Length: 150
Image (spheres, rainbow, N blue to C red):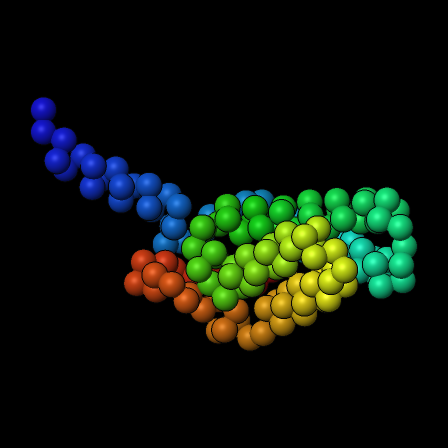
């Protein structure tokens, strides 16, 4: 049996599944993302304010959990559409925000500055014009950006 053609075909099928030319969708996507984004902004803002005003970490744990969960769910909706989002400006901004959040426990004294940096990156990446936000920075010849709103 000759498997020489099976491997490239299988690879192409996997790549197509991970990076579809037409982003996958699901029912109520826009509404779900709007709700998740609202929760994410609310919890992240409350978390940051709590640290700015010196609230005890234990009191801020629910806000941290809400921020992390809502952020991961937002990312999951993007990844469901296509893993190509990770190569767009907005996806790279999310990865930078995750790094900044991971640095908080390591550089505890700088937590407010790190969280402010994450907030600024998120605000800029979310509100820049779509032509920049959806710009594919890596693998441009292979990835179709998800240009949908919401």
